[in-house]
Each structure stands twice: as C-alpha cells, then as structure tokens.
Length: 129
Image (tube, rainbow, N blue to C red; front, side):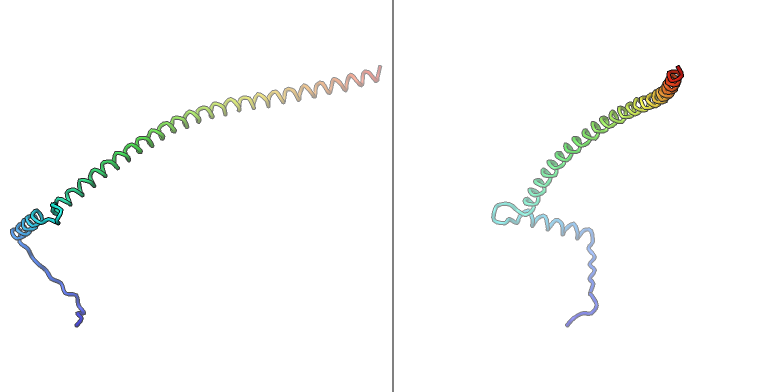
C-alpha cells in the first residue's frame, strides 16, 4: 500500500524533557565502549583535537606563505617604482638628445647648403678665371 501524500509527524518536546534526553545521551555515551577501552565521545574528542592541531598547522603554513607573498609584492612594487622612475628619466634624457640631434641636423643641413653654395660660387669663379 503506497501513500500518495507524505505523512508529517510533529513532536513537541518540552525543555525539561530535552534536558533529560541530552543527559541520557551523554550518560550512555560515557559508559559505552567499543572494546578498545575508549568510548565514542572520547573518540570524537580525540578526532576533534587532531583536527584542531591540523588546522592550526595549516593556518601557520598559510600565514607564512601569505607573509612571504606580501613581502614579494612589497619588494616587487618597490622595484617597479624604481624601474618606472628610471624609465621616465631615460625618456626625458632621450627626448632631450633627440631634440638636440634634430637641432644639430637642421644646423648642419643649413651649413651643407651654405657650403654647397660656396662650392658652386667657387667653381663658377674658377671657370670664369
């Protein structure tokens, strides 16, 4: 026989009964053993203590790794700042060098034109002489 509608049970437990239930649970847990001389609560406590120690070790390792990463970031940031300042200085120096070279090129081209003009004049004077 199948039920088409799920059946729901509601149980109301008064606080006094809840306390009794918890007391019975712990009493039975502390008196029961599994043949090794330890009871289930002791096993749970042992497992939780082991887990706590593992979490603390993992946390310490993660904290050390995080500190190392933060130091790497800080050092890397300082290095990048220095590289940026150096590159900006080099850009300014190279820009000044390029500007001077352009100015020198214009002056030398003008001088070349003047000398070419002098050569033309001298050749014309030489032919005329």
